[in-house]
Image (cartoon, rainbow, N blue to C red):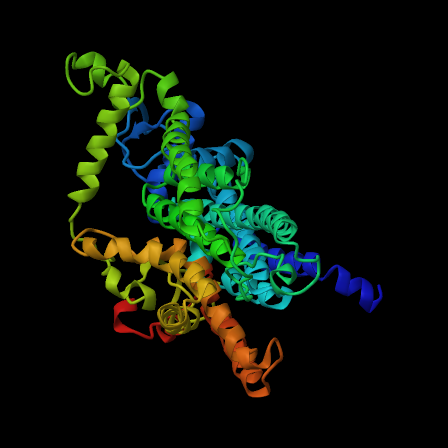
Length: 529
């Protein structure tokens, strides 16, 4: 294959490389450990119950019995669960395909985690206009500990992260499609303006500016146009993004934070685009056309959410399914009994989550999440000496992000926020929103029993912010796309160190047996132990 052919296929080759790296670290030895890890005891058993009963039945007896093929603890009584269905339905899909074993209940999460890395590479390539930096972003996420661990265990947050990144990609596609329509509309309006004012086509002045610019390009805005700008028709990509966010909320409610942030951001993009296109009524043009999106959101998201409860509606044994029938005259009585019962269950969940303050060994303070101050130990067991050849061997899984990625990413986030405040940098704002939407809403809940592994939804955007910063170091604005020798060395060293740190920590993300002293070498902070 010639160099020219390789260059033409550079995007596909980059994505294939990202998928290969991400897939290998997520799927190799997926059956290890042969145990229910951390909250898999709830979700893997719930997934198995869905394949057998069609709903989540209550389990009694030894929580690990299912690993040995003992399902006698599953009863037909509905289990009181506190999270929606979609994540557990995906776990059930893997069990249906590969059996009730560790590979079965983990495989779908591993596949989606791999796809998430590819989506981040695509996003970075589009936003940074570079296949190289897209590849760097995909590889860094592929080698981040939070993303790896949460792809290799049947715990819900990894599934939510996938849908959040999918929604971000779909909304960027919507932005691109809307920009093309706006550009064409602005060009037509300028031609009509020329005709009215008898300005010859190509004659300079306003006639030169016929292209709207993207909020991520920083292109100069064209001259002013009257009116609010054209309508953009049905925005199918935005609707698909709303559906993806609804599916994420159907995994964990915390996805709603992203839904609010991303959809507001989508409207801000429209405001910026119409202003840069030169329309005098840019504010009202974008604001009024956001109304259909808002209406679609408040209709589509609840419909999708309720639809994901289909098996709950279709079975009699699900927890709370008969509440309305058993409590006539209570709740929202004008709703059908099934919906009244579902609404009552959601209210129970709300009270449960807001009142969850039980002390837990690995609960963490969200103010320190970005520096991964208190990671969650999902698994820690002594294993036979023969497993690693040392006097004491251990197998451990720590939901700990790649420390260098998160520490450098936190600094990059500060830079991005400064760029937004000082320079109104829309690209910096776009990337920072992904981090802040998964972090800031949790800060008032520091009193609750919450965990650092929730930051798996932040990880893709932390990587994007970091890569944005590395690109600005290697290709500073003053060089107009050129490369700074010193900046390139700094960026290359940072990426290389992130890869080396990932290689060092990988056994603690996959549970490979290691000498106990080697495990101790990874405990860089006392709060990690």
